[in-house]
Structures are given as structure tokens and as C-alpha cells.
Figure 1 (cartoon, rainbow, N blue to C red):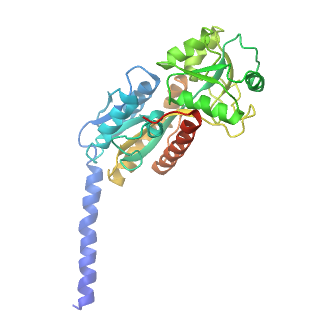
Figure 2 (tube, helix red, strand yellow; figure 1 turned 90 degrees about the horizontal axis):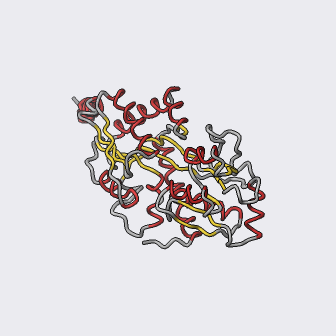
Figure 3 (spheres, helix red, strand yellow; figure 1 turned 120 degrees about the vertical axis):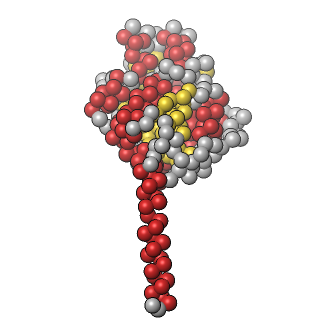
Length: 325
């Protein structure tokens, strides 16, 4: 046998030996229950979404997917836990919008959102509603903008806290409409919405689901939604883009990430399971009732989505004058 033939033979043998190893690793996954870490408390909208998708994943994977709530520090406790977990796919992060907001608010995080995580799939989007107290003398977005311009710095808008997704929805509205509004942060979404409903605050950006009961009780007046398309629960309301702020788009979101380094075969399997789950008619209907829009995506598309969020959040934090801690 010639020397070059021996080299080719060794290369072929190496390939044949190597392939089953990779396949075996993917086929053996998951070897035990999967932990789905969520950085906020139980009972909220994000927690409900996490548990819905976890159950569907369990059914498909043949192993339990258990949601663990690890609230605190704006979600960074959960983020760090997953970033430092072994890269074998048995610990996942059910991330919320705060995942891409924290880098704009904190100078030092114990992890890097792009380096230390592998995107798996976007799962859901949540629309915010531009709403006002009924006493505010406006009928639509254009008359609200005109009123705010006539009273610079006088109208107030509430949010669940500095740097929250709803806060940045308001800042984007201010920026694109060239307005001066006074931001009043509260300790949570319920408090922020209630402040508008009680007439203490003029404008709010509650989630569509949180706003619906208040609209029904005529304690809020809805003007538009923040998403790229109309909300299924409130199809009569235009988007802010349709209402004249061309290009406006701001939503809450949830998605699944794994620690960086998890094998691509495992990422691909998790992605397939999630995308299949969120696209079933039953799941779509359940999610819509909770105010969510199903959004299964490729890992690449989810990664691009997060990068876009990071850029927009950094810009909005600077515009709002938010001090980085």
C-alpha cells in the first residue's frame, strides 16, 4: 500500500469512528430531567408561558422539563446560574425581555449575554398598549401627541420600573414623537396600570392582557398597541406604526437559551421541539388567551433578535438618561 493510500485510509477510519460518537451523544439526550430556570416569580405572565412550553417539551422529549423560579436582581441571578451550568443541555434559561435590558443598566454583569449563552428559540411576544386615563382629552394617538406637545413635561407616564420593557416602550414613544413626558416608575406592572386607572398618572404602557379588564371597566382608554401587528385580543386598536409613528415596534418577549458550548445537535433538537410545540393550534389558542403571540424561531433568528434588542435598549437608556449602575 502506498503512503498516500495509507493516509487516506486513516482519514476515512477516523471519520467512520467519529460519526457514531456525535450521533450517540444527540440520541442519548436528555439523559435526565431538564431544569428550565426563570428569573422572576411564579404566577406572572412569563411564568405561565414557561410552564406551558415546559409541559409540551416534556411530552416530546420523554423527560420532565421542570420550571424553577429564581427571582431577584432583575433576572440576573437566573441568568448567571444558567451561564455557569454545564454545557450539556440539562439546564436552560427561559429568558424575558430583561435579559437584553440589563446590559444597558449595569456596568458589570457576572456574565456576557452574547458570549455565555446559546440561543435556542424565541417563544412568545407580548404587546403593550398605549393607554390613557379617560379624563385625558384625546381620542387617538395624534391628538395625544398634539396635547403632549402643547404641555411639554406636564403629562406623566407610568412603568413597572426604570429600565423595564414598558419603560422603554414609553421612551421610544417619546423619542419618535419628539415629546417631553415625565416618567413615574412603580414597583410592578399592576401598580403602574392601577396608577393610570386611578387618574394619578396620565399615560401608561400596560400589557394588553393587564389592560383589558380596566378597559372593560372604563378606567382606561386604549389608543394603540406597541407591536408590529395588531393584538389578537384587541384587533380594533391600531398599532403605533399605523397610527403615524412609522417603524415603531416594541414588545415584551420570552425565549429559551442554553449555556454556550451545548452541542449543536442538542440545540437543534430543542429548537425543533419548541417550534413544533408553539405552532400547534391548541398551543397558539392557549397563548393568545394569555395575551401572547407564538413566535418559534431558528436559533440564528433568535440570536439576531437579541442583538437588535441590545442595540435598541442601549440607545433608549441613553435617551432616557438612565444611569448605569
